[in-house]
Length: 445
Image (cartoon, rainbow, N blue to C red):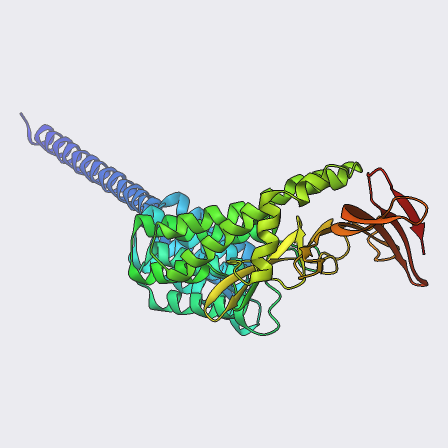
């Protein structure tokens, strides 16, 4: 091989070496580029995955809610809290945030619902205390506004359901009772219709039954004391619609199973007597309402009616109070505490607002030749609710002279039936002597 050929071979080898080196650089650059792209892809995916983590998403929703709150965009803030709870239904922070938004909007009811739902879901004691605080703050607001209602009481009861020994709830219950039932000028009477026609017996009954239910689940002396107190919604006198009498008796019976109270026992005995008298006089009401008055003779001379009359005259009547004309109505009655004991009296015609039938038992000592008269009267309800014209039917069984004819008067027992009609101009009377007898006579004046 000559020198020239050797040189060409050497040049070719150098060229091949240069090409190999260039190819290695290109391959290395491609690897670096691929690696760099892969690193970028991994970084982007990491950021994406980071943002998709539940905790991060929850935090972002809560930050949005806070921003909306600061901007006073309350509906959007609530929506952000709802989204947060979709991410994590057990987020205490989300429940607290949403309740805070509702309270800022003065939607206390929704705040209470959110807090209670949050406590039920998470059993977080902080949410429970927050819930109780909101309820009691509402009760305090009602009290300060002189607006205690059954809803106010229910808030205190709801707190006691969660915390049976909560002193603040018990204290507010005491204040509610005083303001609703004892304070002068209080319009609350759960047992009787007011002049506006309202009656809150069902609300009162449900309130007491809820207290009893809570006591049965978690008995405490404090709650027992409150139940016994709320059992008698009044102080010296309580009006009650007779349609609620038996229901109230049943309620007191339920209360007596919670704890003993001499006052409640005495009131229950008084009510039992009142209920018995109402049932007894039901027969007389039926007679009067029929318009056929003849059967009243047998009723008013019956052993029990005479016994009632005599007990009033002798001052031995138990529980029932009255003097000369003792009313019996089917609309309402009152319980009166006298010297620490309960007595009752039925409403008279005026106290029934002229809208109910009233019977009057006569208990005055009035004798004819040593024979005590037997008297009963009846006042039907006014047709249009107005007092006038006012009719009274009066029935008397007495010993008196009966005109046998030709001015021949013979003393004997007989009935007298008197009908009086009062108007603003005066009273007219129709008197039937020896009513239903052989020598019946009629006069008007």
